[in-house]
Image (cartoon, rainbow, N blue to C red):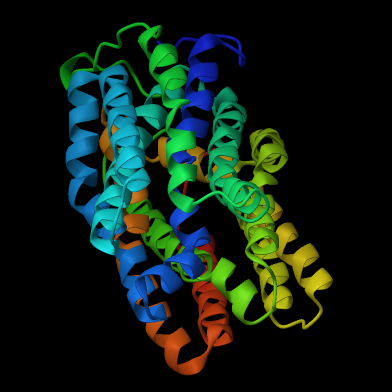
Length: 391
């Protein structure tokens, strides 16, 4: 039977803090694209390739990471993820060329690929379905804080204090020890064998790779493509097309993600009341409307207000999205399920930046942003009409 601890228990606290730490490096390389372009004499298309290689590595190891999680448990995989994060940060801190930097970023991405199936499967197993969205909202808030810290660190440390970008990676490597200590205090988790699996909760799927799960993964792929096309070139677009400094551009990027500190837990509570799918559809609809308006307004203040609001409403559906995946996956295969859940993001993350870089080079930034908007609305259509869940 699924345990029913209080929401604010040590397990969720450890998952939330570790979620912060695993993502602190994720947005640094795109936030310093203008610096990399100058230092290494790179084109936009070459920057797109730099952004594409790490997700490609992710895609190759995603399924093995999920299978291993189901086999050996979450705790060991979480410790492995921090080892990769620390190694990647140290390598980036001493990178002398783009090849060495790409290798470092790949290690950082491998960290998140290992982390996600372990962390999400652990979190969804220790909470009942009724509490799942709320717990995942708090868990997701940690991830959004981590995503925001990279661009914000670049904004403050590079843009204001005049640090070198390599120093940012080295400074953020030190807190990894906190995550390691917290994970070590978790109880060793016993993997669930298929022949010993307890009954699934009402509304949760008893089968793997159902039609709804496949279509939900298709939705995730489209949503990831739209998001990747925007995020890859946002900071450099704000500098090139809107005349902002790297400090201001990094601040907007970080602030947009930072709204998730409020949006993720609030969205989890609302999803628990309205239903995961209904709430995800509504929050995404509002988010995409705000996104479309933002890039087509010339005023930088209005752009900032609308784009940050887009980030807020997009993150309101984060917990619902993760909860839907849990409902579509049998408990004993949650590690593999969440690997597949994040796999589309890795696959399209390897393709979208290259396409976006080529389009930006030849047709301009607005072309890729408006195309990304169409892809996002296509994702919403798949979610609305092709994904069915109970409860």
